[in-house]
Amino acid sequence: MGDVNKILLSVILGVLLFGCAGPSETPDNATGEVEEEAPEAGEPGTGEAPEEAPEEAPEEPPEAPEEEPGVNLEGLDYAALQALGVPVECNMKTTVEGTTTMSKVYMKGESEARVEIDIEEQAGCDKFVYIITADKMYMGCELEGQLSGTEMLGGCNWLEFSQKEATMEEDEATYGYAASAPEFEDVPPSEISCVPWLYDPSKFDTPGKVCTIEEFVQGYEFG
Image (cartoon, rainbow, N blue to C red; front, side, top):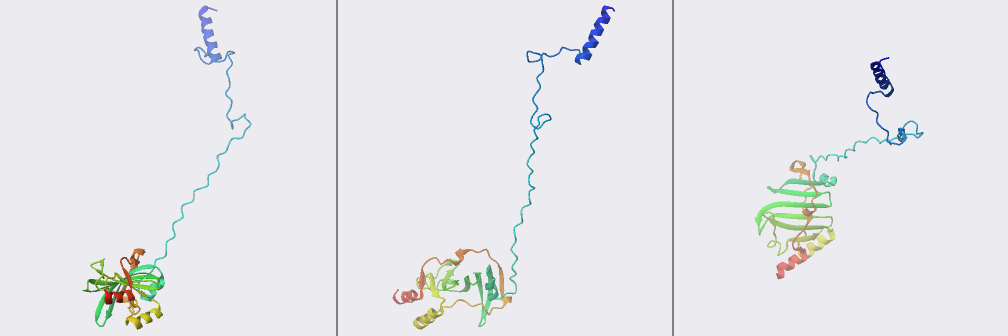
C-alpha cells in the first residue's frame, strides 16, 4: 500500500474512534479517567424520592362587607323617627296660631336630641338651641351662628333644667316657671324632612357658662 493510502486510512480510523479529527482534551486527573458528577437528590440512581413542593391552598376571594339595610325615613312622624334609634337630621315646620316656625333637629333615638328653632332677633338672640338628654335639658341661644345668650339668659350661656316630673313641678311652684322640651309629636309627616346623619357628639356639647334655674333667677335679682 502506498504512503498516501496509509495516511488516508489513519485519518478515517481517527474519525471513527474519537468522533472528530481534531486533538482530544487532556483529563484533569492524573490517571486520565473522566470523573462522573454525583447525581443530585431525586435523580435516577440515587434511591432518594424527589421532594414534592407543598400544595398551596387556593386563595379564597375576600368577603364583601355586609351592607346595612337602608332606612326609609319618608312618611314617619317624630315618635317613629325616635324609635328608629339611628342618627338623623330633620327639618320640621310647625305652625302655632298662624305663625310658622322652622326647626332643625339632630337626634339619635330617644337618648339625645339637639333642636334649633329660628326666632326673630331679640336681646342678642336669633335662634333658640335645646340640648335634650334622658334626664336633663339645656336651653341656649345663638346670634348669627355664634353662641350668645348672655343678655337674654342673665349672664349665662345655657340654662339647665331637669327632665324629672317632680323637679319640674317644684320649679313651677318656686319660680313660677318650668321648662319643657319642644314638642313635635303633633307635627304631620308631610311637614318633616329627614336624611341620615353622621353622628357628631359635639352637637350635644354645652360650652360656656351653664346655670341652673335657681342661679338664673338669682342673677337677675342680685346681678
